[in-house]
Length: 107
Image 1 (cartoon, one colour):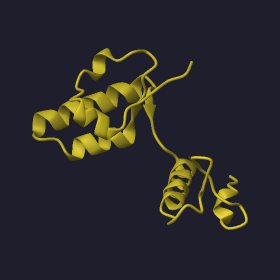
Image 2 (tube, rainbow, N blue to C red):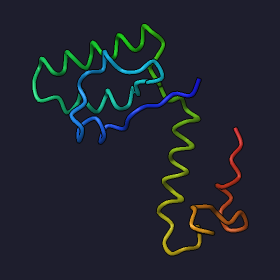
Image 3 (cartoon, rainbow, N blue to C red):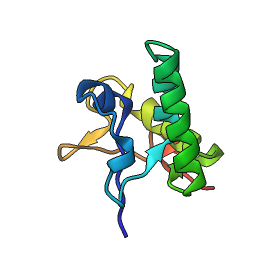
Image 4 (cartoon, helix red, strand yellow):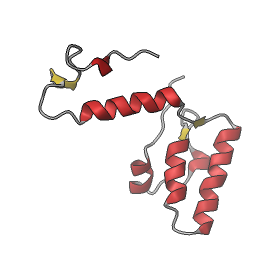
């Protein structure tokens, strides 16, 4: 079954707090929870987010990036920082393999 998650910016801008009532296809990101915990306004909010973390972890619905996930994210961010349009083709971001060997990702 396909699933979805929210970025921290979505949680903050939409003031999402009812993580107990999310659809079955929702997965919580450990990175998002880390950012929400770090930015909690008070101790009770921090504890709330930590409880959400534990619940999603126990139910195996917590997305935790591994080393390969971080490497892919870093490469995507790198490609997004290339100036000009050398990495764009047809309106979507792509990389010219002859110019950037980072495009050939192998794990």
